[in-house]
Length: 193
Image 1 (cartoon, one colour):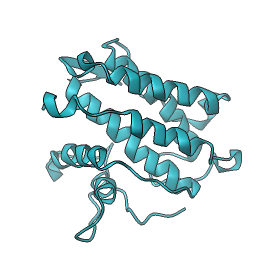
Image 2: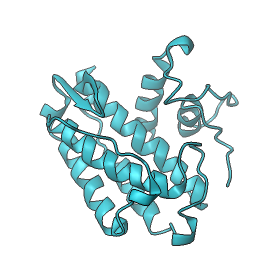
Image 3: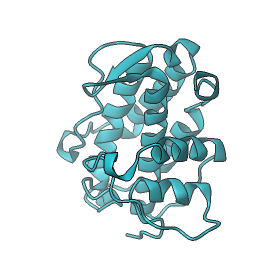
């Protein structure tokens, strides 16, 4: 798996999230997202912590925390700070050493190659959440979507962490890779605000 995952570049997914930020208005911070646990503001706070925690995981620093996801904790300078954090996270995962051994984030220890795919999943799926909640277009490169599909498909239904993923949503045959990834995460690809 290392040969395949070591080629995953989190940069395109991180950049896609950064592009979405300019389309988020202050009056949307309390709006719901397809991730029922988060409002837009909660999701942005989660991204702030996620970017730092997953950068630390790539660098094999202990204490990586994916963030609380609470709008009231959102840094007021998030529009400038979040793009910096996302770029630093993507850069850290470009180091081949990031994909070797094991690492920790949010109190969970995983093989580093799996943690890198978790970071990608968080960027893509929550990026889609943010786009849908704020009425913006969203796309994903096929390699990233296929990596997420492979990871999410690896969980048998009875072993899916219910606190993280909802039930798989059925999609029509021929659905795009992004729609299939979103559906595997337990979200309805047709969700609208």
